[in-house]
Image (cartoon, rainbow, N blue to C red):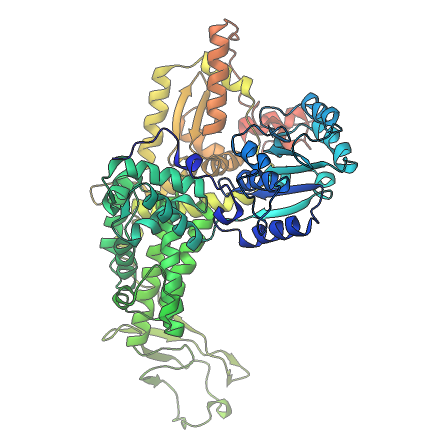
Length: 636
């Protein structure tokens, strides 16, 4: 059983450059500069969390004052190294800019930097999360970076490179700490586990820890630490699934097999179960893309050396062509990039994979049945009503009467089914045109075709909500207006509005929408949570800004508001917030309530919310249009 008083990421923090996982190029640059003593006076380490920026900065600070440098690494035995390892070096200053971001802290550095080092030859200042510094603090730091003493070295570390002023960046040597390479991280995870007396059931466990970490070794070691608590000596894939709700390699391969075999039922069932268990679909999508990559690489090269996640037995389970694999990868990558970190990732990823099934099914039908082109008619049977017989060859040369009727029987792509269509010759100067326009008669649409399942509806909703993000200048909701609504909130009115919106998206026992027309018209309200309703105001919130902006954009359209008003039989003002904004407003409301500073409720006029949207019209015209429609005319 695992028992430790210190977190693994602290216990196994690297103490030399050789212990650093990954970042081979960065480490080699620093080591070479140390050996040749050609380092600059300021470094900027940038990259995502948990990739070793601060650890590397500490090793560099220790090595630069080491008395017996060994191939660029600190010796760990000299007085300076021992002081650094114990955290008591008088020449190393580490500052957390997140909590010391004011100009006074930077001025203290400026005043202190001129004094000489005590143990070593250099004084090293490590400023972590440097992007948190205020503008004034950056200005104070800039002067020091411009003209530092010869014995002063600055190492700045940040996860937000874009927030660093260009004047600071231009005075630093920038080293980019990318996500830790897969092999390097796996080796480090296995080393830590072995040192702690643990082993892995199989390589799949290490693979999944890597995907969960998203390139961060600190996150990977935190994951490993949790697994050590619930396992005895052997860490199993089952325990990993139970704690982090991830899919095993075989489950992912089965998902791909379901797609290529057009087994939509099994795919939907798996996704529904995974959603109920709380699976992280971002991690799932990334690992599925990795498997697809290896399948494609092997099918192109037949080189087993390219297989890292899969083995030959796994590859042989997926019997399909490259086109299908590319299609699945395209749909999955698009879904992941559009919904990463979103609440709708489950729905969108499932729909994208179902699109691949639909495409595969269409490809199979087209490959197993004869191709039909508009310009070529299979088994044509032509009846021509004419006064005199017309020879078959070269139709263009014949002169015919304009009353000619041609009926053509064409063969559709489905076997044993025929459809009669009328072909109307285009006549000009009693000659048949070279182009014949074929217009099939409309098919009778079955009742099932005009229905829509809730999953299909969600697909439309997701696509339209994503498209709405391109729209700019979406109006925001003033906090004071929302607080005014909360003061005048009425529970019975909230229940009434909530019931109406819920009924728009009701489904029958087969999963079909009861009223497709209503559901599609008021689609932006899908998934809305009615938080409060006052006299004529409704507060709605969504988990993310994606859904929020979709509804807000539609509410700026007069026709949409008119239809909403007709449904509720009264004019309502809708305030739509995402989770972050709603949480902020709630805290503000509670604070004012506790301090007895809540305002007196004021009934809002219906024209207030969208009053400024038609700024090119006079006040009276805009108010009249909101009340009576855009066709109203006001006399002089």
